[in-house]
Amino acid sequence: MIDIHHHLLPGVDDGSRDMETTLAMLQMAVDDGTTHIVATPHANTMYAYDRTAHETLLQTVRDSMPAQFASRITLGLGCDFHLTYDNLEAAKANPSRFSINGKGYLMVELPDHAIPRTTPEALYELRIAGMVPVLTHPERNKTIQQNLDMMKPWLIGGLLLQITAGALTGAFGKVAQKCALELLDRNWVHVIASDAHGTGRRNPQLSEARNFVANKYGEETAHRLFYDNPRAAFEGSSLGEQPTPIGLHEDLMPKSWWRKLVGK
Image (cartoon, rainbow, N blue to C red; front, side, top):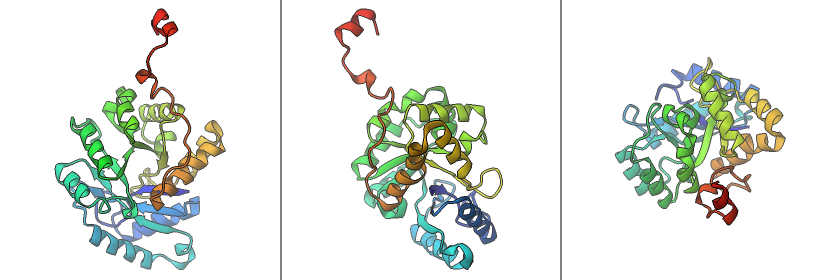
């Protein structure tokens, strides 16, 4: 499994507090079957994002890993990108600065309780600048929970969706779980990741959610969401063939004479 949303860097945000916690998180992930992890420190008004400093810290993490699992995990760097004016201008000027391994895929986080009115324009600007925005945990956003369809134009415009493994197992409540399942039912999800912040409730284990997806939606779907698509993001390559999203384009299609007649 490949985890592209993980707050493992020690002491830089609300994730790992120290190197001891970071190494415990990595041990937990390796034991659970994860082979690649992207460190995604927050990039917002509360937590400054310094690519050079974070790369140096990530190398310190690599150097600190015990030999028994250092060879079993590959680490990369991205961020949890907030759509602030300064971030947008910086990303447009240097698309590799915030993206996963500097290769184009950008993890985008919205506020938990609202959708900034400039969101559609911001996502469009990121796409025009050559980045692939990946919206993190939409199933946990209070506004999106009330209207999943609001994401339709964003998805049509090239946005990808990442849901949280813990949402599928109920760690974020029944509403988030219901929304995550609905997004999976619609084939709107592209990646499932941990959004790990420690070794407690928000830990890096993915296998329980992966097994759930494999049992409910099939092994092919589980492999795509936990390995194939995250690997493409990690490497900066194009996604392979994806299942047809349900209900995404129908509203844009002209009605046939029969649909007009029956009012559907």
